[in-house]
Image (cartoon, rainbow, N blue to C red; front, side, top):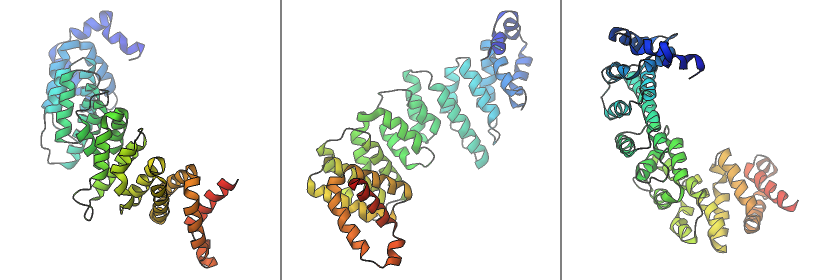
Length: 327
């Protein structure tokens, strides 16, 4: 809060706000709807002290959800500044069914704001409330708030499951990455477990397994870990196979390293440009192990017609890797 706003809580001005009649405090709560005065309304309500908590609680728990959700977010911010942890916990636990999809989406934004605000309290009741909420529904704000509790692993299964959600994946990855070794074996299990099966795996399951492999790349893995992941070299998903191959290049024996290079080259045509760039980096890092396979593939592709070679992006990439080695 800047110096002008701090004045609201100090001296005569602060006492004046704390002595406001109830109806004027209600009017300040209503001002949260104002485009021009809503943010100032937060500061004025905070200056009112504890007497503003009751009206703000009614506004949040009894008010009508809407696609225009900023006023309710403002109420959450005011309650957080007033230290009204219990009100925010009660709100987070309140799970109203909202038929209007626009209003439901707006209320989700308010829930996220409340969860992030609760992350400032590093207490057991807050952690358990966030965990219960995440078990009911996946919310980015809840995931980010759980990240404020370093070293707590109880949420790992729910966080791993959230890797399937396009909206929550990046937040879940950030929290899981910070947990590191605590989630080591959960990442391996997630990478190895397609849902419902390999032949009929859902796109969200593939996203979870790719994310788990990305997270494993940030850990110090052992040969035993590679053995558990070895079957993924043959996965039908290009990214999963490529990331398993990258782990093999670091940990496997020479025969499996050569197989890993072969699989990386095989999936290159189906890989997007970002994955192609990563594969190029992996092959360059392990040039000695990769050179034989690269040369064989270059020779095979150079046997094609000049027209085919001119359009062969994989050939150009492999030639670039070999040139970099030679230079």
